[in-house]
Image (cartoon, rainbow, N blue to C red; front, side):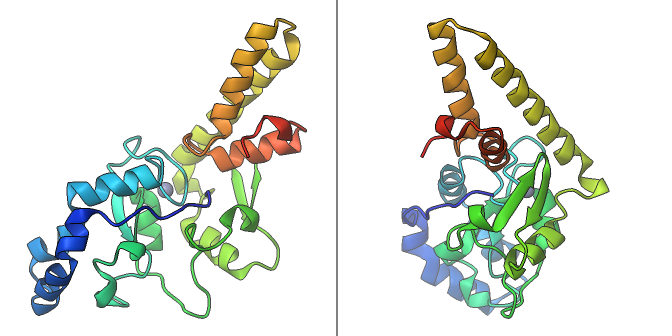
Length: 217
Ligand SMILES: [Zn+2]
């Protein structure tokens, strides 16, 4: 999970959110009204905002899921936030399904747009844990079950990323050709950048191995 910045509200949402909310609240059973937040302009902006990744597990949208528009505060808890831009993000089906309608105002879910999530979580290879004493992180990790047996596809994909990282690092360390080292350094920086899958894990591994200097600030 990476810290994120909210982009400007899409025009289609700014122009329609009041009417859309009114229509939705007037007839909760009407699915056309309910799913207007799935408008392609809204989804497209959310995908730019999250670098085309699930906001929680950092899997690329499209890898195992078309990506679900996610309500940070579930609509079942506050229907008035159903079309509120700051309440919308994007998650893979696996994370979305696990978070489901979780909401507890005494122990909130981690919010990558508000919380410094990068300092709340620890990465041990593909295993994600919360920092001791951080209740938000603990509940988030427990609910999303990043390392559970039924998320083995995610764990395997993260292990493959770690193997790729190790391979690039070995080549980087073993070559004395300046041009090739530069190419490999760019590759390492790219893997650690927010654009790439599981970049929080990659950054953590690079820091642990003593390569902090290759990580983009
Ligand atoms: Zn996910």
